[in-house]
Length: 103
Length: 213
Image (cartoon, rainbow over all chains, first blue to last red; front, side, top):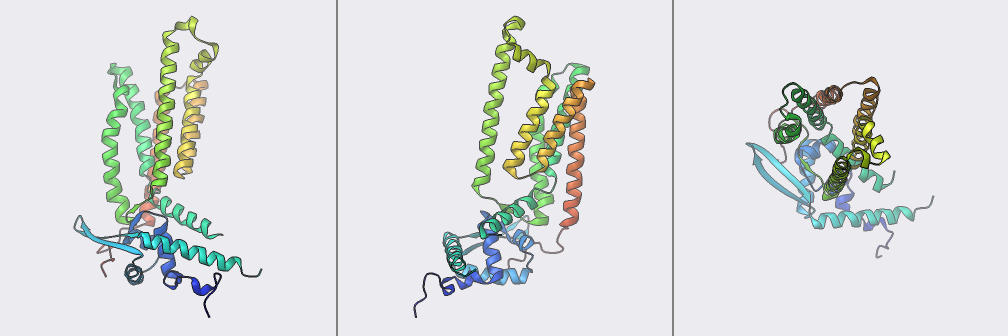
């Protein structure tokens, strides 16, 4: 059976996972941020954040740039155009689904 | 809370954490303090220091601010670049205030050149209560920046300036001493914020970025 417009199956499952949704939300409201800033804001552990970022990067939602600044590793992160569109679409789908739920 | 509000809250939290280091306050306070010191030096040696002091401060304080941001703020909370929306609003405010300031300056020059007999009554009133008007202007400017930047404490600095200038007018306290007081109060507030910021965000031990895992 094909999912309808209001079906929860329509939402992007990659974004729907709470940790990745948190990352997407935090990156959505800024132009770019580094790993440390994102870790501070989300309260996630470095390993957890890193593994979720890798999944988002693989999907083409997050652009990861690694460089050295003053001899310290620096990871710059930003949502790609595809990531922004996917997040907007996710919001639309969740809202549509929630709006159709009975009180 | 709606999702839109949640996003605004996240944006605000990110923005606030970046501006709770007290550096902006210290810069504003230093600016007021140096202006006051400049006027005192002028009174002692007639050097014209108050005129060039703001330019000296911009050329000295701005690089120090950028350096301090890199050395104090970024190692603790990381780096973030906010979107153009906020910067555009701030630029529009700067532009608006500059044009308004230029307008006031030209108007002031025209009326001063006209001589006492040529000046309208309202201008004489403005001139007579100049310190109160400057205080009120500071409060309005502080509030505009507080609203644009989302930093509520700038409201407080603006209205504190107004309160001090208004009471200074009636108590006949010289302008430069009021500037020194405002400068010291704002620097102290900035230093307290910085101490709080350093306690809340200690320097991470070892490697500072684990994004390479």
